[in-house]
Amino acid sequence: MSQLATTLFEPEAPAVPAAGPRLYRVAGLDISLTGTGISTLGGTTRVPTTGRRRDTILQRRNRMRLILDTVLTEVGDVDLACVEGPSHHSVGGSVWDRGGLWWLIVDGLCARDIPVAVIPPMSRAKYATGKGNSRKAAVLDAAQKRYGAILPTDDEADALVLRAMGLHWLEQPLAEVPDGHRAALAGVQWPEREEVAAR
Image (cartoon, rainbow, N blue to C red; front, side, top):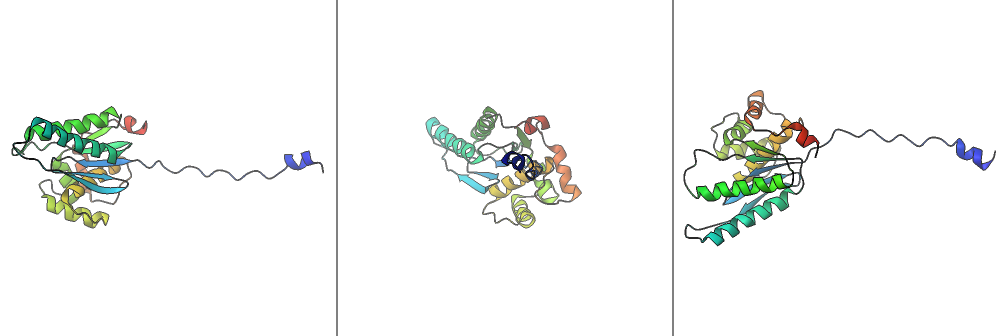
């Protein structure tokens, strides 16, 4: 048999396995001046900073800039960022600075074309514990038990729960949760699914 014939009748190469379902990259962000919690596929972390009432405008600006830059670096390029919404019952502390920091981070995410979901604090607590009025300690305990995670702070626990909610909305839950907990997803301001799918 000629070399040409041998080449023409070689067995076919094995078929390429079909790709599995897309795994979404989701980040959870519990934004705070004193300890912003961040949860990504790589794990959880916290950005601790301190300030004083007599800080100058420049000092306050530099503090917020540090938090912003660290958050955006840790988040990287994701398909969805789940951000805890402002607490309307919180009247103490630096209200202007907290609001400014929240918008700086949200704006930074939007500038990267990252879809953003805004999750009310009560929805985050309800998803974690089944009760919207649960305190942070209860959310921390529930997150550690459900996800088998060692979480040093409630900031990181909140961030992990926010990330878990985003993954659940995208039908890739980190763990099974009772129906009463899952109902918390309905109270979230989600982006259009097409925005996330197009990432």
